[in-house]
Image 1 (spheres, rainbow, N blue to C red):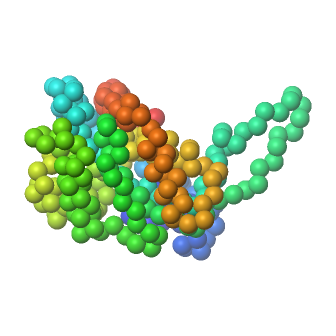
Image 2 (cartoon, rainbow, N blue to C red; image 1 turned 180 degrees about the vertical axis):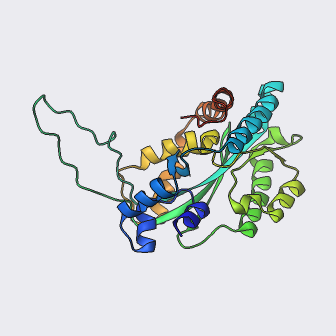
Image 3 (tube, rainbow, N blue to C red; image 1 turned 90 degrees about the horizontal axis):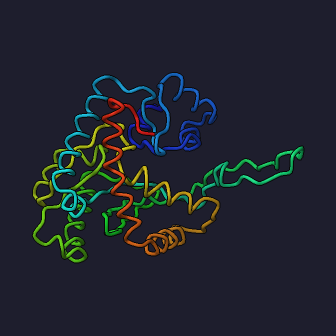
Length: 274
């Protein structure tokens, strides 16, 4: 059951799985790490050790993407559009590092009250590129993104690009997404082809090669940590204000990190880029 839950949502937290199955968080962690042999990478559960075939797939896909990128780098970054989903919680505790306090030598460390994420949350599907956020779709807790819902988002993406990215008028979108089932279904693949998008390869269990995971969402979660929101509208407003305040260079820098990560993945023979 735990493995199936993680496959359906790699971002699930230990406490969420524990509450759903009515067992302790410690028990869930033990099962995931000892029996399923998984760990977290860029806030997603991945196998602790990749198989030879999985590593080879990561190398092959990195080489293909790198070939496209180096052939015409400005064109690659101009056409590149990526998306991913993340949960926005009404309350996310600060990390140990964020809540660290200075103490004098010999003084006891300050005690931290144990906290956990609030039950309130909303799913954000973020579409963005080197120029900034194109649009964000929000889905309430309890709702799920299926192929039909996702295809509607892709149609909206096409409309938003026409309206917000005039430089793309005569260019083909170079689209990046991960391997969630609704992203890779036959219906979705047909829709991507119908919209005229060129789909970049993305290997399984590779959040370290997805700019949303290794860059955009990690920064967002640090900003939200420690803040409490009373409803979805409040956390949504805070998120959108945060993204709107970021300069164009911020998004460019995030996308440009891809080249180094592709090269590093190849040099590591497909192992994770930490």
